[in-house]
Image (cartoon, rainbow, N blue to C red; front, side):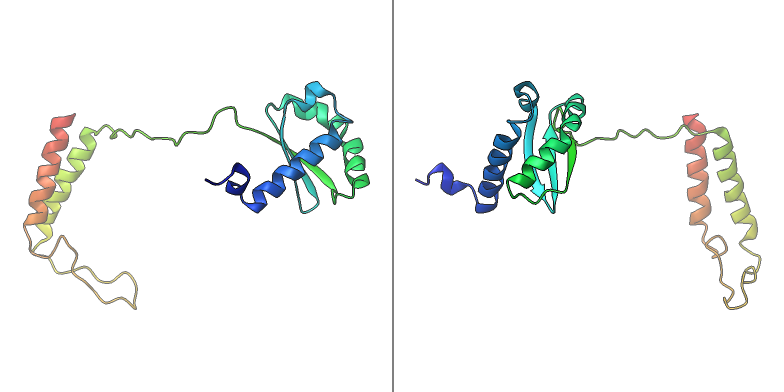
Length: 164
């Protein structure tokens, strides 16, 4: 059976050691009551990231920011700035959206019925000219001579009238 130290990869182990070392240095500057609310330290690219459990503690840490940075430089740690982060109180849960259908109106039913009627009227007419010169004229769906579209529109209009 593997020991606990063998289960943790090298990068995580290094981050934990760095956290412990920074915590020792900062414990000389920051009061123990404030230090208890600091969750984790990490140095990335010259910036020391401090994670706290409540935003109120960030203000207290900012008062001693200059002393902390000087102490880090004395320990030969490459720290230029500090950034503070607040740990979420709870792990965020994926948001589920419940959608409801929009209420239909009598106007929608009337418009669809008019569209079905116009589809019936326009079936015998020639196709409209193209909107742009480079487009060839096409027959629209309404003018294809298919009565199915008109029937589906009438069904939809009837269903919308029932729902109101």
